[in-house]
Length: 557
Image (cartoon, rainbow, N blue to C red; front, side):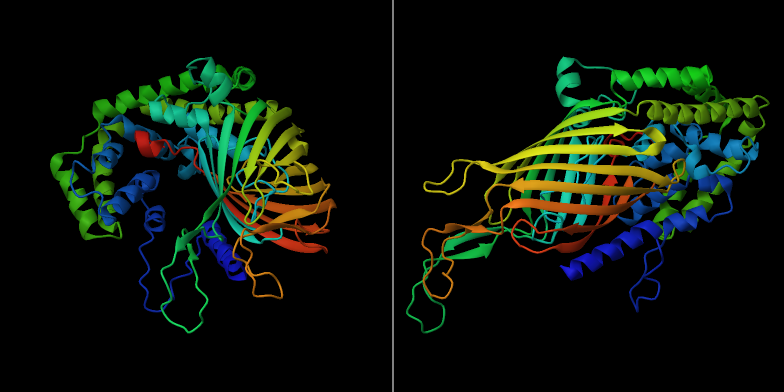
């Protein structure tokens, strides 16, 4: 486990800081850093279209794009005569016209989807990791929010359990998955059109998570036919073999009774309308779209399209040069030639300026709506836990949070856990597993308006268990001090009944694009199976795929 913990920390550092740690790795060839090459280029147009160029080159390098037809999704975003290329063109024109001074091109492409991403990063109600009862979790308290579409979290450590595990958590929202399958704009926000009461009352508030303990392996009993070697006369009729690299240890369902952060709820829509009115009507999504279309018309009327020869040359150069240098040069040459007539239009400067104003107002309106939405949040949570060598349990939890805006958020949990299934005959315990209450304070301490934010969390947890924990001893296990195997297995009390206290301090780094890195330290007076106080560390990484739909729909992000 120590090795896994160290590897996870190394992985987190690489993801966060993108350090060139492999440059001196002996004779191992380092793959070209396409993104760094692209963003370091001196051409403003190359920087603006960097994401498309990098995706194009990577697809060619991976062998998935071999023909011009297969490259069409990328070429359409580079061809100035196509609508998908205009968003980045506006960023280039805005820089040339000095509309916003030192414009950060990587952040200027702001539509409803990027506003949604900004709002999501500012939220502190979301939980992506596994619940408290899972091994390897970094969460001592459940929060009321969850993923918008899909999130993936990898955590290592221990809080209330004795097993120090590594846990992977996959979370999703039922409504967003439904919209993705049916193709009804899964990235929609306040412009979402309802598809009926079933969606609004059941799918939209429902989030589901699956928890897998990747440090545990599944097993399966298989019959044996005799000894392959050895002289012992003892016959063995069956053996247990590994059957998997990981094990499903829990399923969590969350139903949001009240969550004003959700941009699809009526409460958030009301705050959104108020924010737009307060800022200026020019900040509405409709006006932003209209002003973008004005620029689109100028570009399409004057830009030179990508011809077949240029398309073929771009593909051929990308295939011959995996570093992307040739592809970048091809695009730079095309853009200079194709945009000459467009840039000479006398109305372009003013219209680009209006688009950039609308983008800024649109983003600010989202942030204002998010701030006004702060308040009461209430969620019901159901956990089905499948711990290793212990009885399965059902946990019923009520999660209440109140957001004090700039002062932070306070969250309270109240839970009741029962054992799954029928109690064995003669068992000395009942259905009740434990009762639990917990509280947590979260606050963003720096970078509230920046891409990189930091958050501090302080949490306390109390659990009362009327009976000691139960350990399932499987059949075939040899009784201690003997060579007698237990034929049918047995159950034993382990640990102590009574109160379990846990405290935790956690620091979370929240990056742009939905990346979160929690690092925590905890203390407990005991664990579920062992007596004696315990100090532990937890570390994880999660990614919120809020714009995953673009992979399926081809929507430009």
